[in-house]
Image (tube, rainbow, N blue to C red):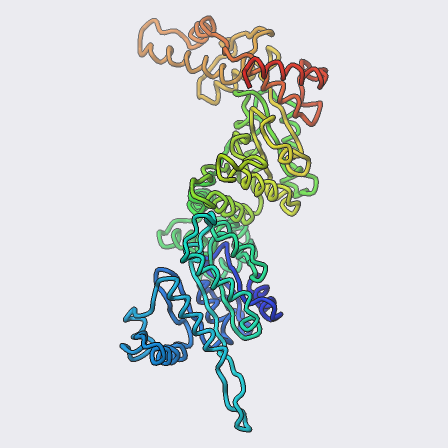
Length: 597
């Protein structure tokens, strides 16, 4: 099966081994399955169900499909199944087939049960009936000739959803036992019978089913760049001069579209062609962002950046380090890159802004994880699994998690949130430690309270480099930051209008921005008065009325926590670089008592 997807080849190998006959397919299940037949080079595209029926299960005599919405349907071998129903009616005095004249009218009459308990019981009877079929050999003897049967259960997450065992209904228990029995029954495993369950995420499924060693869990990945290229070439084969509709060639387009499903790629191209819109880089960025955010249901958001590290004031050592790593990314030196960064520092030091500028410097897509927690059992883990699926397909991506101490979960947490926080922690820790992702998925956590983040997530091999950010320490740094904030807020300042900040004044970027906004407000309120003043005057007035933040103890604690977490002495200002770790911890303990923590 060299021309078929990897997951299909794996599924065929497992079935041929004779040890496992039940498969749980998950992942990119709603996409086209693209493949080349062994007799021709033309790319073919089928839905997953049609691919299973016509390709994977082509040697089978009967293929039954079931879901709770449509009930039982026959994709293949309807006459054999209809014959069974007639025999079943005669023996059990039921009316599944008696009111109809054939398989098609049977489906149209909707006489087959949709209820899982009754429908799966009927399918189970058919499987047992098929196991006992015999045929006559050349010598007139009856020999076993079991019916080759495949059963496809779609939307399996709605049939056996993840739930606490205490809340599992008796009907769900019966359904679970029946499906587990199909996986473990040696009579079924030794026959030409296969059962296939399809669900989007494993974490949406009943845990007993997912953890059953007698079934094979096979993930259908989003297409890689080579597969996208084959698909792009197939759907644009009629376009002789591709440059007429696209700014880049097909190979470059495929690389840009990595992370999308084949259906999304088709929609993107056809949307442009049919609306006579040229496929430009801006169009690609806009539509790809829209499609990925839509497929993630708002759980990830693109961080779009037109800025670079040149737009960051102060933080010289941090900028130098990040600029070097951005260059390594551009040069493809992935082995030299860390797995991720932990950006720490008090509120208002520009952690989020620094990440945005780093993404612009590296020229790599950056996404921020958002809203993946859910109140329903298993939904949060399913959301996170869907996010990982998209990240793996994006080629190279920066993943930003802000307020990481609140988002990343806790080891052993479970009493207050039914264990969700602990499972989030476990999933993130496992994904972040996968060295196959080095240079491809680049993790950046940001927090003002790194002491609340689990140690295992902060270790080398997950977040290798810890970069602390501090409020500007020198008058020069303060003026540079003030000028950068004015530029960010589109406030035009003359050099002489930038105030002189005393060395001893402890002021952060958020407070400077507050001064700028206050001054801008007063400046705009002048309207067209004849004696209108320059904005520099109002900046001076705002400085006179400025009051430092009252949470000095909490800010000091955040600074010390950032110092403790720092992994390189060069990141520390002189004020902190010579402090002994023991004394820092003593001071942090004092501040904790003062803050009542």
